[in-house]
Length: 109
Image (tube, helix red, strand yellow):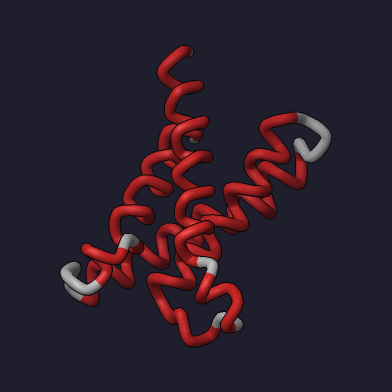
């Protein structure tokens, strides 16, 4: 499942990044946003809730929150408060860090 979550993070980053955010067709962008939202909610409410005292449970919670925020940027950024809209580069950079953490760990397995 970690491979799927990592792939969702990377694809979400690609679609949410400013150069490709407008270039991607709307149906594809919304589909990726919904998949990213579902993966983030799964990370938060299933994996993190069962493993919250472990390192990967906390990592799942943090990356899940970042995936939900990134999905919000893709789907409907106007619903977010102004400070979260302005924090988009920081959120995307943090999500990139978690994607790298997941990818490196999976590669080492």
